[in-house]
Length: 147
Image 1: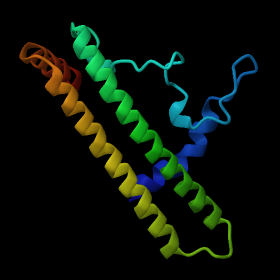
Image 2: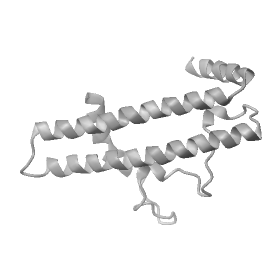
Image 3: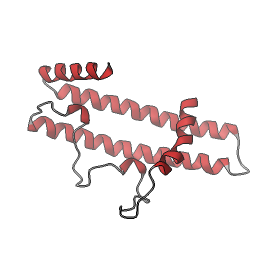
Image 4: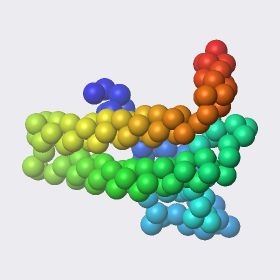
């Protein structure tokens, strides 16, 4: 719970950490989780799959999985964002109560838990699309990155 409160309190600081420059296009109306998506609309492979010698078929299937995951994740992030706005509005109202804020935080925590579960399902589905040799190479790569 404390971690969630810390994360929610740091969101405004993170938004101000990289201010808009005059020669950059504005992202003001774009949700923060869409800022770093590929501009051409094509989904890219997850970073952990770089240098894995994937076949075209594997790449196509993985990109489709990632695309469907991002559609679901975007909807959940928008919902979590609206909960954050509700918490903010409640904090500066006469209607404030710890019980109401706790209920909203519980909703946000449930959304983030579901998103983490979906991400792990996506990673497992990607892993199952790899050949045994690729799976071994990926596991070795992951083990070396943990050191």
